[in-house]
Amino acid sequence: MAQPPVADAQLIARVLVHDDRHAFSELVRRYQSAVRATLRRLTAGNHALADDLAQETFLLAYRNLKTFRQEARFSTWLYRIATNAFLADARKRKEVLLGDTEATVADDDEQGTPQTGNSGSDHTRSANLRMDLERALAVLSDGERAAIVQCYHNDLSHEEAAYVLNCPLGTVKTHLLRGKLKLRAQLAAWAPDGQEADHG
Amino acid sequence: MDDRSQVRTADDDWLDAVLRDEGREHRARYLADDGFTARIATALPAPATLPAWRKPVIAVLWTVAAGGVALALPGAVADATHEVVRMLSRQPVSLADIAASVVALGMASWAAAAIALRSD
Image (tube, rainbow over the protein chains, first blue to last red):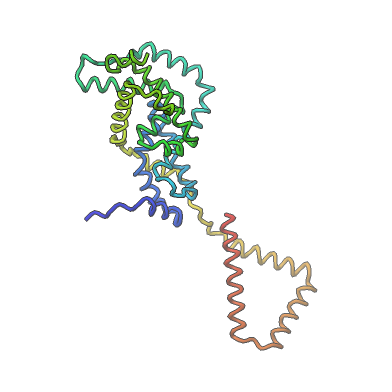
């Protein structure tokens, strides 16, 4: 008979008390997918950078595990570390990549004409929408994208997102609001008939 | 009416629906480990173990230090030794005294070990 999985709290205690590397590896195995997928979203699909940041996230989590007070879920705490790592990295790259980013956005604008896929099958339409959404998310600021990813992709409440983003609740709401305004503009071609016109 | 509801229009519903659908798919997707966990395990800092040579080296250093003091202050060491022998020979030592001394020495050793480990 299969044994029930050990609770996160027990694994964390083993790491803290006995420096149990196997227990920590089990925690990594449980959350690697969620953390890497979140970072892929945050880095706008840069898988190599996302995996580097995920590795940094877990190493930081190991080093700072004793500061984890269980006030949030372990996954939420990991999202917080991952988001901090992403934002710190983005700040570092910003100066170097500023010119490139503008060029990339311009390129996307040229080739990224929304493919509403109305003529194709539902599957094609859904795939096209997903691609357009990915492109549109890449246009958002780092803070706006992080807020959208935490609230929609990771299904966190606004309060949890504020904890993850390490900012006031009002800032999260502002990021969400502005992010959605930009997304709506980017994805205007996907709006049901008449609704975009209403919005101006 | 807050800021959020002020901009909530009909088209916000379709955008919300798109984002929620995408979020559901995102959470349902599982990224294969592909050696990621193993890479993390090898990148973890080495466990803090004390080197095997540490104890004998410390014992030798203490012996050298004690020898140095004995050579530098032969009179003081001789006086102290005589005094200790004199005190012990004059006063009968009970089992309780021995036990108390052992406990005191033990506590001092543990405290020193704890401080040394913590500073590592």
